[in-house]
Amino acid sequence: MSKYLIVGLGNIGFEYDGTRHNIGFDVVDALAKHWNQSFEVERLAAVAFHKFRGKQVILIKPTTYMNLSGRAVKYWMDKEKVAIENILVILDDLALPLSKVRLRASGSDAGHNGLKSIQESLSTQQYPKLRFGIGNNYPKGHQVDFVLGKWNMQEKPIVDQKINKCVEVIESFITQGIERTMNDVNKLEFN
Image 1 (tube, one colour):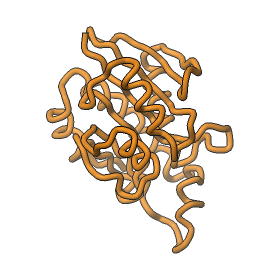
Image 2 (cartoon, rainbow, N blue to C red):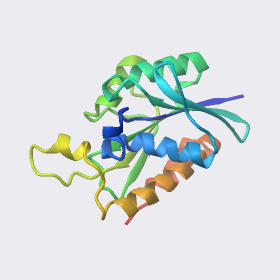
Image 3 (cartoon, one colour):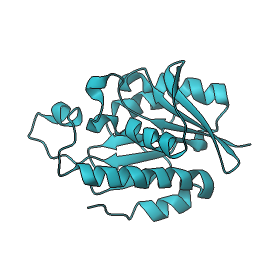
């Protein structure tokens, strides 16, 4: 049976709940809820298991903090013997507008510390990523405050809509493969 590792990036701790940087956690939480699964804290991550259309899916939210996410990804990839092309990492992306999500089969860390850590641990950039656009609507020098800030009232409806769509995107990635899913999702515009 083929296995999939779905990784939501974020930081543990209630002070990070609902922040832009934790959107990866929010997406995998929504997927777990959709599948009626709950997370158990295990080694290096909160983990949930699910069988979806004949495939074993492992959902993880690393408990290592963003900058050490790679340790959790590598551990669970090795433990569950998941092929690298069957990993999907969900993360926030400043370079994408809030109206977009982007699925890629590979690509650089683009300055994202979570991806930097994963790239170091896996020794490659060649793994799928689902980038959740958070926009870059902040004054010069306030990037950290923006990324670690909570969604505002105008953003929240778009964010909720995108989270629901990401659940569908992940199911499609598992059943249809990345190429078909990319063609469908990368041209979407949320507003």
